[in-house]
Length: 208
Ligand code: URA
Ligand code: SF4
Image 1 (cartoon, protein in one colour):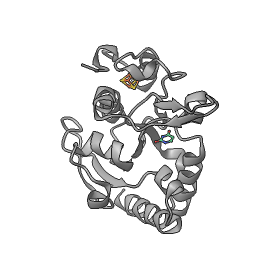
Image 2 (cartoon, protein in one colour):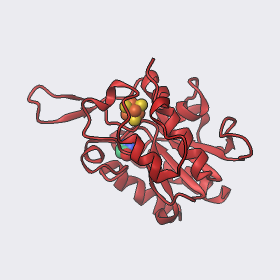
Image 3 (cartoon, helix red, strand yellow):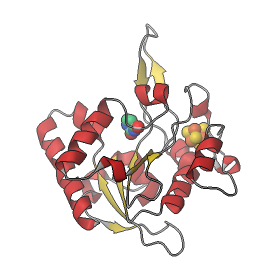
């Protein structure tokens, strides 16, 4: 089965894990992507954000949330009064999954499968254990499923902080789900959805 576990280092902090993740072959997604996009930010952050997977620009630069979704997220965080400097930001899946369009000029995002998400989950759990944030905000369905289980639904489960049951012994990390910034960019009711994202991020800020 697909599984990142054999590639995890036995010891070390975030830098050791980032270095090891560069060589992960736990699922087929490493084959076509440029490289692993590991988390960035404060390794002692009180608030951790989890997206889906790197996009085209993130894949090229090797850093999460530097493209259009990242710019929208930055704006929403600012509006919610959250200082991006103090955050740890990562993705549920660390390689970019895409298809090429007919002209092979554009790489089109494809959602990761549950298998790929579960394969990559050991990296996310290691980041959770090492950063040990007070609160995790999941952005969209993939991150929600990774941390709240396969029956997670954004619509039903968003906006309320709840205990993260398998964060590990002795941690009391909570998790709050919200929409994905890319979904806001695609939405027809973009303004409403953006307002919802900001409202959820305000709840997150108040929960710290
Ligand atoms: N979307 C994500 O979920 N993560 C990124 O890093 C960029 C876009
Ligand atoms: Fe490893 Fe995750 Fe990349 Fe799959 S997506 S190869 S599990 S880092």
